[in-house]
Image 1 (cartoon, rainbow, N blue to C red):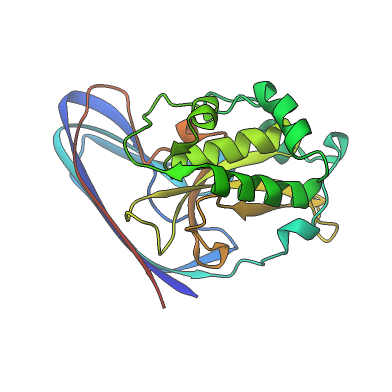
Image 2: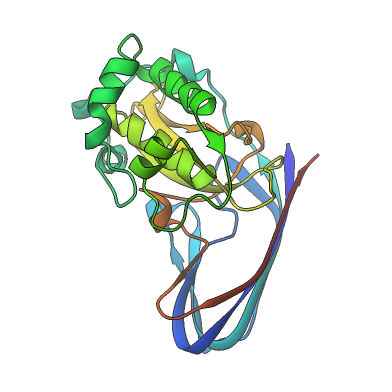
Length: 265
């Protein structure tokens, strides 16, 4: 499966400002970059640094005034797909270091406050079956609605409101998984079929897989139902949205246009 991505966005910096960008498809074994091209406006400083868990890269720029970025890529998905419900949960003491950090609360995903709910609502499920049950519960109970959440909206806020966008669905999925002692992380991605077309967000959970060296494997979960793992291109991962925003500015920024087009063939 080959995915074609075309992205462009612009913003204005009233004064010299450091900005961290992350919008390119990650070069990782599960997805092969066939072609790619990134165009950035001239800047005082531009440097690439590894992103969280070495999945993808971030780009530091230091600039002032109008700035634009455009990106085009063709990506072939080579991801091994597994029946989520068939996977077991790993005991915390058996988890590798890469997974342990994703058991803990983070800025937008406070799992502690949801432990009682998880125990009562999903008591008859474990491991991947519980993750599938949580995904389906969110899909049934939530309404995908733009404009009802913002940059400060947390998983608990969205859990109470029962509405939001992909970012909010992912945060609730992550918080409920962590409340079940299953490591979960936020994935920024591209996927065809996302409506309205934009950067997309899903969750990944770490479950048992005896065939791997670490004893486990990361599995994609999208409670919105819009992203098919067989057609999803990872940009980066993090504890929540704060770790993997496509643009993080360390100063005043005026956002301009943004366009994202993702197709498959």
